[in-house]
Length: 123
Image (cartoon, rainbow, N blue to C red):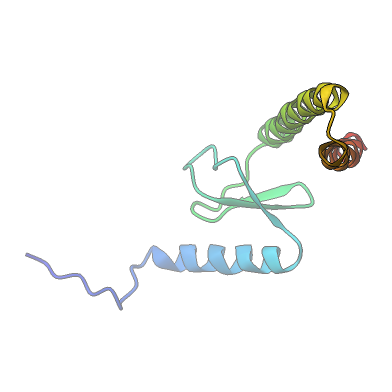
């Protein structure tokens, strides 16, 4: 049985180390992690200025893949916006039927927060 020394890197590890260094540099310069995995190897990706880099395989997907990521972000934002708007409707109904003044104030604060968040998301 062959023993594996965890302190000795594999030959293919050099590419991974270089990619990791490049990804770290990108992150330090304002890049972000992409929630969608690499379409080629399912690895973690970072993106900056529309350029995505897979930390695992080093491939950069075609423009179409990046458009899909942007569409997914828009859909996620749209779903969150709809959820917040539904919550706003429920709080408005609750406010209309609430006789307690202190509870009304609490509901109004929640409504105000939701209105601010929805406004920021729409802009």
